[in-house]
Length: 262
Length: 329
Image (tube, rainbow over all chains, first blue to last red; front, side):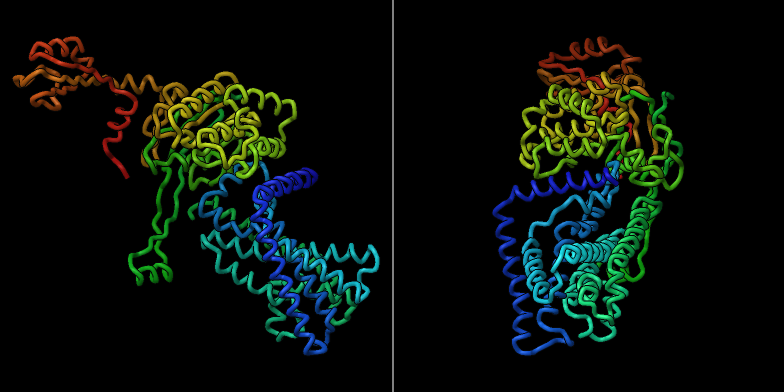
């Protein structure tokens, strides 16, 4: 475990140094990403200039849910997005290189890349979370901030699990782009309060593709909203469980890559 | 410690390849009801490699070279048969095996693309748990043998192919692996870079006793480095033995080419076959065991004034060409 933490730090450093080789590119991408995310948040504000509440939630509550979803997604996207390249690794044989190193290949994939274009989402999300959290009195002391940090990590883990599972299908389909695009599109739903959707979508986002735990449910726990707080408190467990399941699936796929006859 | 490092018995690997019928409708049919064809990439190969050996692995494209290496690295599981590397099954215990081997694949790099060469080495040191003292000693050695110093601080993406291969070679030997596989390490390199690779392999095999399995199409890679040759064809081992013996067994053939001053009468000599004769040129081939080279040369020069004369001995390349007999797939 300690070995992996040290290695993770070293990989992170290497990734950061690699990013800084292309400073201008990095700056331009993130300025445009920042703008896009500001527009998205502004959209929430515009809606609330016409209506007083959505699904029973005030502007700051919706902003909080929205921003928490953004931060979860951004942390996943920045740190662990490279499960998206599993298809490419299988198709072009890059996986072989990872398999001859004495280190877990999934660790190598997830630690081996730092994304360059989603820092704007992280920034906007953190600012939104702070503004809404202050207004609602949810970031008053260290314990609350720590709890939010735990929820963010769990949410990012849920994102990782969903995309890992979607991309693991590449072992059989060779290309997993379409399935992953579906997973990618679905996360748009996760930033809004789940109770404004119908039962079908709510069920989907809770029990099948659990994006609900990367924003809405943990926010309910923080709000102390009794209807969903129980699910909210289970966020960390859901994150670990989802990732464990996806990891099992990945191992199964890997075995078929190496195994006989296919 | 047992002297045998690799033991492969009846090693077989099949692949299931989906066959897509032609045309749009065919593509649709292939999607709905895929048909598969079994391809044997390796069909019952058995061999042993001892510690400290340097073995050349030759064969045509698709003969099974890369599949063999993937099986030995544990990247693939065999369909049938078994293989052990240093006593363990490389597939079942892949991580353990990975710490003791190195793999070089020509044209592919395992270094961090955007970072200076030294950064990759520092990362690999941690990945392979190389003690600092051993790391420093090896880096110093590779600075000598591979002139690593001149590229140490250069980002990998800016290196020429030759420079990159030098860096990759050093990276693979960094953790003192007892076994290193090389899959066409000299492909695409210029003559000087090829020479550097061969020289380094020979040196590291001799001084460190690193066991090498070198798969290549360039038989000149083997001349200096690999006394033993494994030849694979259609997934089977066609030849396993010394390079010298291979030359001895098949290398008795000599070809004489003469540039003639003028038209000569048809050339005949018992035991010698004429490949080609025309106004200015005579080409004959014979076995040196049945006819002495000197006798042939004398007969040729007697038959007609000769402007130029060359004697070509069979080399590994021409022997391999003849063994395969134009049999491609």
